[in-house]
Image (cartoon, rainbow, N blue to C red):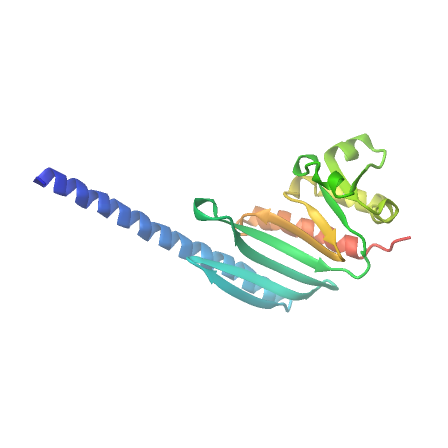
Length: 205
């Protein structure tokens, strides 16, 4: 190999090493930012903080009583290879909601729910019914849950909803792809969380 070839090889590995170093530094910076968000939230609301490691990523979680409900917010890694990404989820335990349902924007749903026995539920408001797709096997209970107040609350967070709110066996859950590092993402996530908390506190007829 001549001098030019050696130089090209050296430059190639130099660039490769530089990319790896920058990637590690970026990961460390993002981990610190996320960890600070979770630890401060846990401290502010007297919640328990924990974390796990996945390669270069720190996966954070907080759990405990929050606004009168049992809350768990956690990050997990999904996918494989280049398709791996962090998903952030919250769950709320509710003894009052003992029926299954799903709430999301129209485009978030497929027809899978119908195959599982879930029924599309509409409320006679053209704009509302067009914006959201709601499914449940227990139509009467779900209509009682989604009273005018909760319909108004859901409409207010329409632009914040980036996933599906689901209830199964009394456990409400909601997941988004990505992390809460950006303030705007956190605000949207917390708005959906507050709506879910309001659902758990709704007195059913």
